[in-house]
Length: 227
Image (cartoon, rainbow, N blue to C red):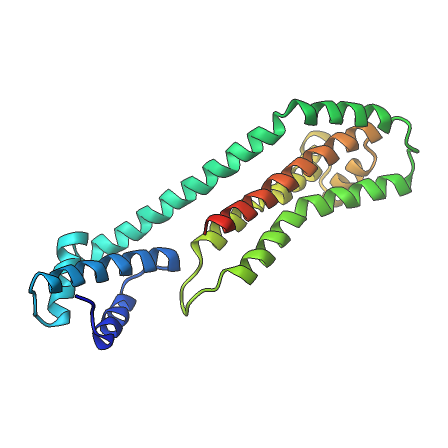
C-alpha cells in the first residue's frame, strides 16, 4: 500500500534527525524504509506512521545507531569503489606500451628543442595546466550535473573530486622534493631547480601528466555516466 502524502512527508521530516551527510546514501536508506513501511501496510499493519516507522528502523537497521553506521559503511564502500576504478584506469594508461614508446620518441626529439627560457616556460606552463585541469574540470562538471538537497553533500562529487587532487599533489612533490636533497630551504628554489631541467626530462614529466590528466578526466566522465 502506497503511503499518503502526509505520511511520506512525516517520514522525510523524521529522517532529518539522522546524521547522513551524503544525499545518495540518504535517498537509498529513505527508499528502503518507505518500501518496508508500505509492505507492512499491505500486510494489514494500520498503526500510526510513527510506530511503523520505528518498527522498521529497529527491525531492519538496529535503531538510530544502526542507520548512521550503515551510512558510514556505504560511504566506505563507495570510496573503495571509486579508488578501485581510479587505480585500474591509471594502471591501464601508465602501463600502455604505446605511451612508453611515444614518451621515448618525444624525449629523444626533445634534444633538438632550443634549451632556452621561453621553451622551459612553455613546458612548465603545459605541465601546470595538465596537473590542475582534472580538479577544475571535475568540480565544474559535477557542480553542473549533480544537484544537492539542503544540508546534504554529493557522494559522487566529494569522492571523485578528491581523486583529481592527485596530479596537483604529485606536481607539488616534484617541485619541492628536490629541496630535501639539495639542502635548499627556500621553496621558490625548488621551482627554479625544475625550471633548469634538461628538455628530455621535462618531456617525460609532460607525458606523465598528460596520462594523469586523461585518466582522471575519464574517471570523472565515467562516474557521472553511472550516476
